[in-house]
Length: 296
Image 1 (cartoon, rainbow, N blue to C red):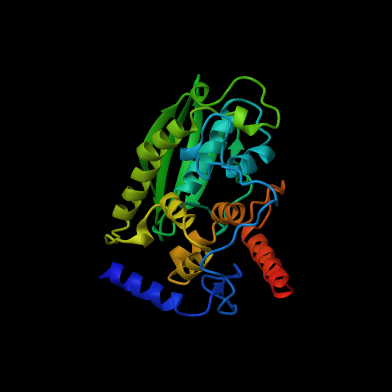
Image 2: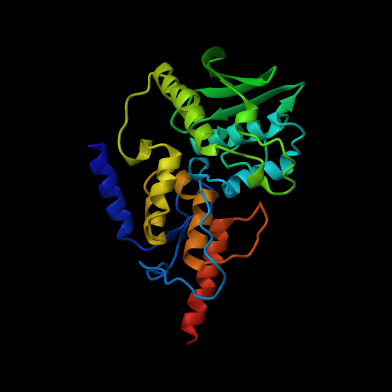
């Protein structure tokens, strides 16, 4: 029944004018002309290159890491091999749909006081687990990092999962300079290990502890799976999905997604700042393209 409602809602929105979200709330805000976003975006030739970069840590290969990894790493001022591991752990939690506590936007830097007194502490909420918050505490123990995930519901704190990682298995010892890709190794393995053994069990335990009913369909797919699906769609379809519900609105406005869509559709190889709003940039570039076509 829920899948049918989702399809009906999607079809209803798709039949309407295209919608751009201004990011100021939880739903659509502005209507553009019906032909604003074409079903097929014609890629521009000769305007740069189309970098084949990973969007998620699970897609990383030697010499290539996600742009989001570089965005978090560069301002983190890492001073030892443990610091970049915690940066990647934070990114993996974000990829799973968790939101840094106190904000509904993905951070472009590490959380405030993320390392304090030799201990690392990260706090999150999740849109599918309203009423609960999670903390990931990382404690150095010799050559290891011991990671403890806890759940807080009604001021009661429960320990959920514990995981030990060896920084040397994922962080290169050599000085990498500004090349973040040379800092990390085996990010695919780290992603699989950390998510399977800690993040996904934490999410499942939280929903169970909150007595939330089982839900099905596109809405409850993990964020990283939604992003992998959405990046295959034309922009018209992404905008239609954003109008279905709050959860899909959040997923369809993810900066990782819009960076991928922008690079795919405009082949722009310009180096841009880490605070770039990729959806706004896509909108601006699309308007410029429409104006050029109108003047021909």
